Figure 1 (cartoon, rainbow, N blue to C red):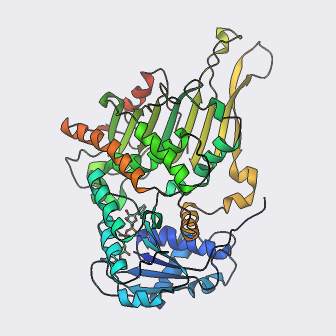
Figure 2: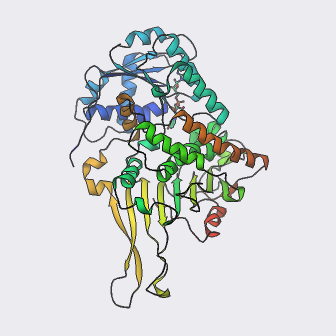
Figure 3: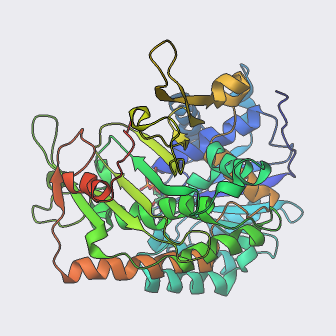
Length: 484
Ligand code: NAD
């Protein structure tokens, strides 16, 4: 495979929250890897901006520790880190005050792509946008990258969209959902729209159902207060799972351009039916020998926030009427695994008799770990003994099929930051998409709150509450096993 690094123009990237967890774990190591790959042209600079008092030298020290801890990637040569750090500086900046802004503005250059990454808590997004404008830094060419969560509900998302719109045009706003930057997620579009094989079957006539699973082994960790105010529905379903659902279910866009793709995704969200409460299972992990319970983690003994959710959804349109989409996501589960499975219908008539059993083709797209795809195909079980059938996977691990370069493919954050620099919004959420997603989730949340619904307890290390298994069993289906 030939590696192709698409050149970008020189850029000024300001990371607000440049000392925070996300910057240290993902953004800065990712930028270093892009530098190593030759994608940071001469004249580009990265400016950390946060509240902590720090000199540029101290910041460079922090960046170099972050790169050492969170991965430098395989292609970096000795000495590259020093060269990278020469591009890095720091300005102590207060998002809620006036400190640092004049100095920050002094570092900006007029003839260079300008991107501002809002890697701070959501309560500061509006302050940053307003100050960028007030201090004359919001030029027509500048871009802002806004982290999740984008609002807490429809009302707050609308308010945030309105605030950002006062200072930036929609084409300048990059709402990040890092799931969209994953190699496999983009491959999903390539598989659907680059092959003749699947698209004719991609509808309710041939697809029995679709499962989307995003399972984590970790608990809420240090994010207890935020998470308890949010829960799996707001934290995962409203954004990541719905984005995956959109890419699976959308109609082919006329071209791979930002608005064409996002228009089609929006139509899917708007076609989602409301979900009957019998089709939603909420769970909370219990505690015991292997660690604290959810309620202990969030220090709220009466919490009714879900750390797990499973649901059955329907999309009301010609393509999908009658095909259920089962979504589930949760924390402290058996394995860390994300997968989309398209389960096709059984052959209409078995010529092999009842002994051959029931068989379905499954196209499974693994997002993590070990990104790749499998297609279960029914074949004859080898050997004597008549016509017994067996489902075997045609397995394509990207790492195996494409060699070491697949492993060196940019991670989601790297890819998305470079898309910002290039000015490509295809893999970012548009304001109306985010609002439509909240418009769908809000009534579901309000309904269970009105019912005083209490989440079911599940064992850490399990597949979630028993009721989630029943959600499928009642329909004569079952979840695919969550494998590490
Ligand atoms: P963090 O608390 O570790 O860091 C926050 C940063 O904001 C720090 O650099 C801090 O100095 C800065 N800051 C706080 N108040 C400020 C102010 N008044 N003026 C200027 N700077 C200020 O948070 P984080 O985990 O890095 O998360 C940042 C954003 O990214 C949040 O919106 C979060 O929801 C989102 N996010 C984080 C992760 C993750 O893995 N950490 C994942 C997805 C989304």
